[in-house]
Length: 155
Image (cartoon, one colour):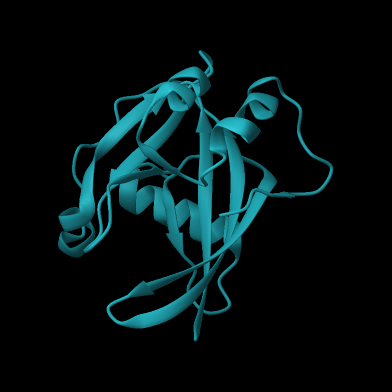
């Protein structure tokens, strides 16, 4: 099984909304997830997150906050079994209009736009969110309750 490290941003606006990207991969239902992506070998997670956000949202001047969540999940992609270890950093940001396309043609095939969500809308939605319990853990961050150590948010 291939191992992969990834880093993601929990971008929260002053009106308590989180920015999520809608993605759909082959043979899966659409899902909403936080911006971010894979780390290069030996890459610093904060550096990688800045790089990923620059690639996906076209901005690099982020004030990256604390590491708040972790997650491990397994998936099969292109017939390869992968174990992904993700870390999530909190970013407080003014609300902005995110781009509606990814610059990378391969990623853009799976990308179906960004949306600002509040926790209530996530809970009420029938859509799939990643992590699956994002609506459970999001209110603490909105209320500025930062964990002493990162919380494992599950699959």
